[in-house]
Length: 344
Image 1 (tube, rainbow, N blue to C red):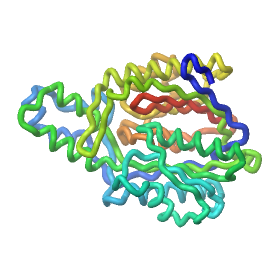
Image 2: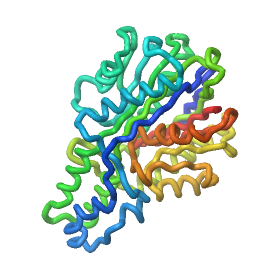
Image 3: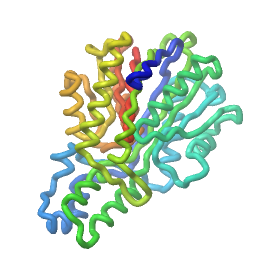
């Protein structure tokens, strides 16, 4: 760990990704439908329709059809990941939930998912909440415990439910006296989507067919903690500052990682956090990434928070071959970043 720049490099010795699976939320909400809901507001502010598509590249997003859909979605994604991995639920020693969404302040979301999955009393479970970085932080924590020999198998899940936020935001945007600046401050809330993902990790020496999690780098820039603030009633974002500082944070982490021996200049795939077209384009330009190696899910799913990156990886997994190299590039508002290399 370099105490001067706050950069942390980590290397895993014996950890593999054994399964990763997505569950789609069933209800599609198109950007055209949202424009129709906001038509009178856009007219009053002199704003055009189609901003979600042109500015963010988001054509649609999804939502669950029941209030507990995200819990059941997490559990189903976990079951699918177990099937992929060929691991029995009784073998799971740790289950981490990385969601932002929650039905209540207490108890944790993890206990509901644990119960839904029927995991054993021996299975440690808890939430890691760190904005859009929660799932990736959960994978790092699980991998560390596997390396330490405390557990043999771990599951990480995340599911987001954004219906309440979308409905509250639309209602709030209809308030009297709203300005263009205030509308744009809440614009990012309406690009969010719902979905679920689950992953199973285990010891690489016991699973040569697995995908080796080699390690990576994390970096913090928490002086940016006021750029995106969300609560029960809404989310307020300085989108440009969040993008600029987030990209800068990733660049710093990338540079420091290279000094510690990581070479990520020619990976098979770069799986990034899914925010918008402008964010992705800025990251691709800053890191000089080949566009055709950066898979996208935000055009049809929106930004699914901490589930966005692993959902994109789950979709990319269908085309990856043994020996391919993957770099996951996660960013969470606050700001924090985590870059992790996986050998397929």
